[in-house]
Length: 173
Image 1 (cartoon, one colour):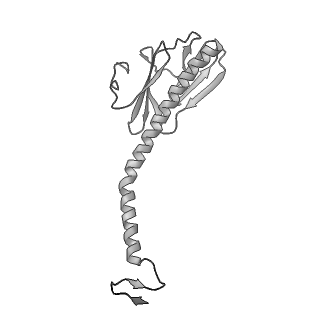
Image 2 (cartoon, rainbow, N blue to C red; image 1 turned 180 degrees about the vertical axis):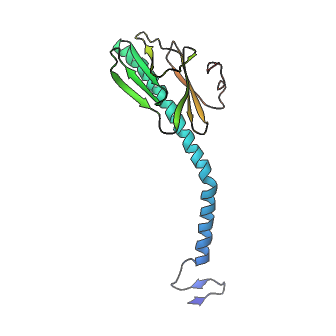
Image 3 (spheres, rainbow, N blue to C red; image 1 turned 30 degrees about the horizontal axis):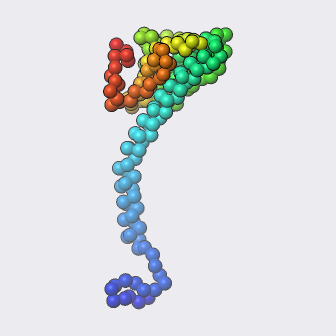
């Protein structure tokens, strides 16, 4: 192998030295060490947001199904299990939604009263009336998303930290 006037190698052997490979690996390790906690927190928050969307979609589905079938349907709240069940008037389960591991219902209020008993059923009526829901979905690290339903339109609004009415009095006086 020969060396040119500029000091670069000329020949068929090209590659990286062991030192260059170690430096690159150290840099990669530092970047991963610094970014891992941020990525982990972002994934946890997205899990809570997805759970809140699932609950909101479930409540909207319960209302729409009640209207389309023209029958009263109930949503059974199983707070300790992290589950909601959609029931017909005979008690048959039509659909259910489960919160993922490490996400739970922190507080639930129906028509302004906090739900403390397990298995409370809230009724959805064929004319579109729904109970006023206020639900807080939280993870083990304290990140929370709040849901509010409008009793007339059935619209479920998701309220995130930093939103204008995140600390609204509707969420548990």
